[in-house]
Image 1 (cartoon, rainbow, N blue to C red):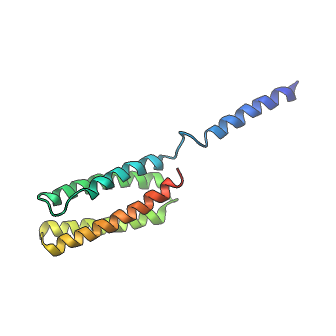
Image 2: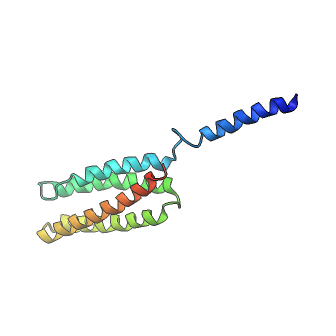
Image 3: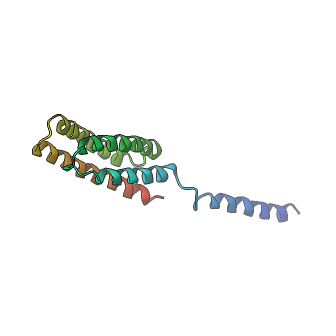
Length: 134
């Protein structure tokens, strides 16, 4: 009698634990990277040659930084090299944007555009690697 009851109970418990591995139970990093991806899209839409572009860029960078901090927290050590790459690119981007803000010229705006491109590329690598696990 015990073995007849134990088998269905074990079966139900195993099935319940396997259902938790897929479907809607994605890691938190999947959601935070989707949010970051949206922020990057908004950042890429800033036209550096338009009036007020630098203040729009700085505002977008603040949003991206907050979203990236959430990804870093959720990603833990699994994506540490990608996170480090984004950190480095972000530091370069904020530096070039600050330089362009204090001395707007063709040279400083071009440097900001190049840093923005490198930053977006680093983020895209992170996003792709995270999404491959979601």
